[in-house]
Image 1 (tube, rainbow over the protein chains, first blue to last red):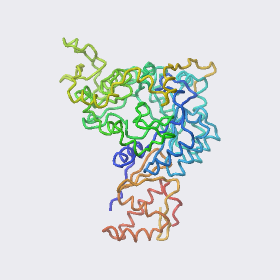
Image 2: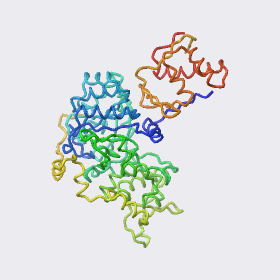
Image 3: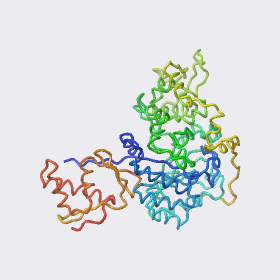
Image 4: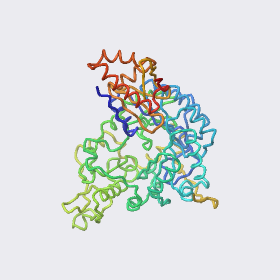
Length: 430
Length: 94
């Protein structure tokens, strides 16, 4: 009699179970429309959406649980800025939901850590940008934030709360993967390092200015090893649509970065179960790599991690190749193949396309890369006709980070600017 | 880890789980991972509601084509694994 079990990446397992289930098993709830940090690379626009009340959030949690929900992630903005966070964490646990908390750890105290432990929070994920205080503080633009955040991690670990450090390599931090791993070990925490900085919601490109170059990310150890068998044509390009995402004002989205309304929970009363039947949900349920006119013919598709929101912001087409993804795909290919040869352009080969940092790419028998033009078919044009939001204008994108009311929409004309601040002189390295 | 016929087997109250068709996903409270139990493991998980080991074996031996002696070996190994992951309520009494 076989009693075999498997233990894999939690979110991958849950995503697979969710696909097999009739109802969503993961919920990402963006509780707060505000933050106490001002990171340049943050994808969010804050202060224009509004927030659900505690009662509305509890109603969502009950409905999610009744529909078979299993894991709820509370995030923001900065979720710890909500006075009702702890009661909500406790309520979710009482309902039988596993809870994950995303935070920057800045407000953590021993008492707060104990309260989180008492709520049986499964995991706290904390953003950390360097093993050096000054670099972290330069990213957050909050002097002293590294000290508070790392102390927060220590408080949580002292209460036996699982902590995962989430690292995003930015141009302001020269930390390597090895240095971050050493800090995570010292803090007794897990470490997760992402590779890419996405574009911002509302089509903002400012966050992309904080990206490290692919060469820098490669040399610092942040470019993941590719799998040559990855990304088959019938596979999914990213996690959009695999979990429920609810924005702070109650808008249900396919992804936290995509302001595409699949419905509104809260006072308007959209049922989560009804969201599944929306046209947008249907697109993300069905979309595969074969629907991407450039990517489906790209020889580096196995090395690609693309993002709908970044594509919308960078090139105005959610299905088109864009520099942020293509450059990283090239870096991953180089890492996988051990090839560091230059990418040539078709212009150099006497052809048309002068752009080498955007695919699709062709790989010749000598291992040389060249970029080619995207060929659109009648199917591609029909797809855009059916889902016109795949190509949103900058005006539409710009207003998409606002709440749903006419007043909120009008406020969307305001361009939010982040405060510039330097780390305090008192910031010190460990 | 030793189990007797009278050892009470009960899921830890902090061990959250959810059934998906024939499998059960269990949150590991002390790690950032999920354990997926197959059909037989899921059945044991369901039966771990305060019954004794002997009572669990009685149910399983009627449901599966397996000798009780071999079944007990398999189940004890499985329960030890769950115990080590903090998924059972109390340490079994030898």
